[in-house]
Amino acid sequence: MAAYRALREKTCPKRAKMVILLRICDNRGTMADKKNKKNSKKKWEFPVGITKMSQEEADAEVSRFMKALEGQLKDVPEAEIERGTKKIQAFMNGKMNWSELFNFTPDMLFQMAEFGFTQFKVGRYEDAERVFKVLTVLDWSNAYYHSVMGSILQKQKRYGEAIAEYSQAIELDQNDIVSYTNRGEIFLQHGLAEEAVEDFKSAVELDPEGEDRFANRARKLIQQMESASNLEKGAKKGEGE
Image 1 (tube, rainbow, N blue to C red):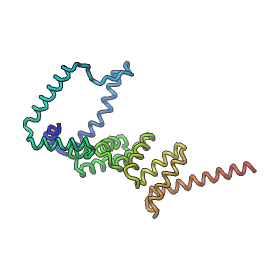
Image 2: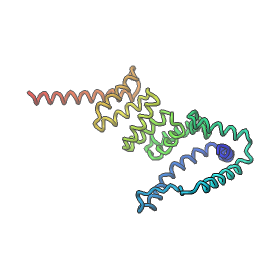
Image 3: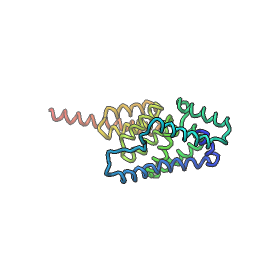
Image 4: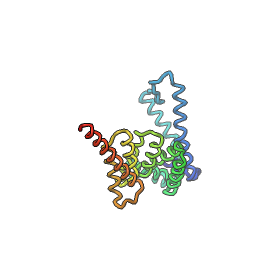
C-alpha cells in the first residue's frame, strides 16, 4: 500500500494534499449525519459493513485483495517498495508520525497552521477546528496544535474537549503558559477554584519577569480570586460580630 501511495503522490501535487485532508475531515460530519438520518429507526444498531464468512471465504477474499495489490504495484521499482515498507514499519513502531508517513514538509504544516490560526482570529471557529483537527492527527506530539485546538473549542463553549486539548498540550510541553492560563480560566468558570489557582500559579512561575501577557492575565485572576476571598471572609466575620 505504501508503494501505491507513492504512485499517487506522483500525480497529486503536495499542496493538493492539504485540500484533500481538509475535505475528508469536513465531509465526515456530513456523511455521518446522512447515515444517522437513514438509520434513525435503528438507533442502537451500528452496522460496520462486516459480513460473517467461513475460513475458506476469508482466504479467498485475502487472495483477491493480494492479487489486486500486486497488479497496482507491478510497475513500482523494488527499491521504492522497500522504502515504503520501512516507513510503515517506523510508523507502526511509533518512530514516525502521519505527516512524515505522507511526506508532509514542515513548510506545508506551517502554512496549514497559519491558515487555521487566521480563521480562528477572525471568528471562523468551525473552519479553524477542521484545520487543527487535521494537524493534531498529522503530528500528535506538537503541543502548539493542541493548545490552539483547545482555544478553538473553548471559544465554542465545548469546555470538556478544550480541557482535554490543553491537558495534552501541557503534557507535551510543561512550559506552555497559554494552556495553563486558559485551562485555569475554564476551571474557574466552573467553580473549580483549587484547580484554577494551581494552573494560574504554574503560568506565573514560568514568567518571573512578568513579560508574558497570558501569565499576566493569570496574575490578575489570582489577585481577583484573593480579593473575592478576603471580602467573603470579612463579610462572614462581620456577621459573627
